[in-house]
Image 1 (spheres, one colour):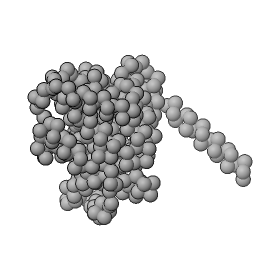
Image 2 (tube, one colour):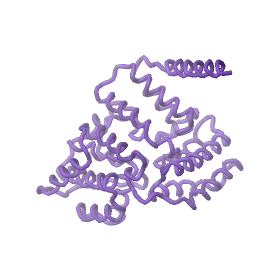
Image 3 (spheres, one colour):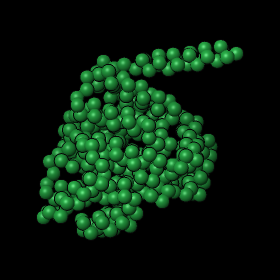
Length: 334
């Protein structure tokens, strides 16, 4: 019996090893296209294609991991290698517990696909709830902003569904109604959250520096004379991070992150005016405040309204952007 168990374990290891060798790309473009396919339900492009895998399902996580491994065997630029390293590091953090990325309307995207299945959607909605329950047991919780946005997304889809989907949505809605969010808005409120935030800071800034050092540097810069002349291109949603409004229009450099529309942010950021530089310095200060110093929503709101002269509604929109896209403001640190 023991011999059989050992043989089964050896066979399993060999199968895993073989499967990890199956995803090979001849070019970076092939790898990027594979990532687009895997993340098609998280796309803003509304392309009609097949449902490759439901977000953060086991098949999704495995396919994405193999795509990352395959890209490591291609010729990457330094900037592409940095982004790939960042995404691979992110695999070890708790993102996989939060199956429904609240920046994207997965249900609407799924219904556009050629092989859409009501049963598949219902199973995925059950996975959303199952993983959130497992996360709670590991002391990983949504914050109140994330909870509100997710709950609003669920309630927006409650009617006119197949019975299986309706049942899953009702059940998820009931669960979210009694859900108790974590008290801290930022990543620091999650297990390993400080390390996760540090990895994001390292990538988006291009420099390895502790949050406290960043905060001191930013606040020193904010003491200097500055222009506060800037325009806020706010929208009704957060499907794209605000930083993308400050990218060049050409978008010629390919990346690997669905949150950034598969664009390389470090190669696509444009030159900022003095007023825009000041704006992003304030955003960086608030980012560190929320994600590292456990600022409350009120503290962040007061800081943004005081520094930028924005109203409460604008400040709250900026806070949501910082919560949903941690450390991305540090793209503009240089």
